[in-house]
Each structure stands twice: as structure tokens, then as C-alpha cells.
Length: 199
Ligand code: T3P
Image (cartoon, rainbow, N blue to C red; front, side, top):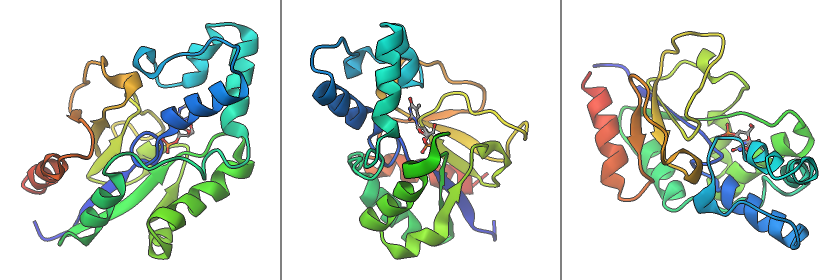
């Protein structure tokens, strides 16, 4: 078709390693407390699983990602930066970053911008969409690790590409969802985009 394909890229769990950073910081700060190893993660919200270990553990978990520097220091997911760059350079493809800030926004909001600037550069500020409701954003594909994305627009315009993360490995795909098992090899995400373009 003649118009560009709009791809929305989620940040945490897709470009930035929220899970790895969370576990690292939790263990550094609370070395004597129980924790959830990455291969035992289940459910999107890390805090929910920590609350199951005890109220105090849950509260400590919450504090980890509300701290200054947490979102800025996230490591890029393997291949993510290269994939984002390559995708943005593709003919007929428009790339946007579509990310939800945590409710305690103080550090998170500005650090999400700083992270994007640090890893992808100033031009990418133009692509940034911050919203707590991704269903109202117009796009052809949303690449996101959260299994069940709901909001005011039902159904959303985009097709959900579920990006594999520790917490969603065993999740059964819903109608219309497709799975992307990481950014490598690049042929995988390129195939998904090409397929969508041909619809
Ligand atoms: P994103 O939309 O970039 O994936 O919930 C607000 C953000 O924090 C959202 O970012 C998801 C991320 N997040 C997790 O990935 N896991 C969690 O357990 C929590 C609480 C938030």
C-alpha cells in the first residue's frame, strides 16, 4: 500500500532490560531477602510476585524501580538498539517509541527521555509517545512484552506483537497476537513487518 507502516516499540522489556536491572538492584540492596530468579518469573508485574513472598518484600520491590537512576541505567536488550535503528531507516516504515511511565513519575518520565537520547540520540525525541493507555495510539504493530494490553479503545488499531520476556514465556497468545522471540536474528522482526505491509 502507499502509506507508511507505523510500528510502535515499547521500552521496558523490549528495548530496555527492566527485569534484569530490577533483580540486580534488589539483590544488591537486600542481599538477605528472598527473591525471584528470572527463570521463575511469571506475571507481568514483578512487584506482584514479590508481594507473594511477603508484604515487606513487596514494598521493598516497589522502592527499587521508583529510585532515581533506575530507568536511566537500564541495559539495552540484546540487539534492540541495532534493530530500532535499522527499522527506523527502512523505507516506508515509521517507528515510534510507545511507553508507559510508572505512576510515581518523578524520575521515570525524564529518565525515559534520557535513556532514549543516550542510546539512540536526539532525533528519537520526535518519536517518543508516553501514555498510560496504549490502545488509543494509532499504529499497525505494537511490539510489547505485556500480554494483555487494554484501555479505552477496544479493539485497538494495532496488532500486538508479544515480545518474549521471562515473565511471558508460557503465556498463550490471544487472537491476533503474534510472538517475537527477541531481536536476533533481525530476519525475524523484518519478516513480521514485511508480512504486515502486505496485508
Ligand atoms: P513500558 O510501557 O515501557 O513497558 O508500568 C510502567 C512501566 O514500567 C511500563 O513501561 C512497564 C514497566 N514495568 C514493568 O516492566 N514491570 C513491572 O513490574 C512494573 C511495575 C512496571
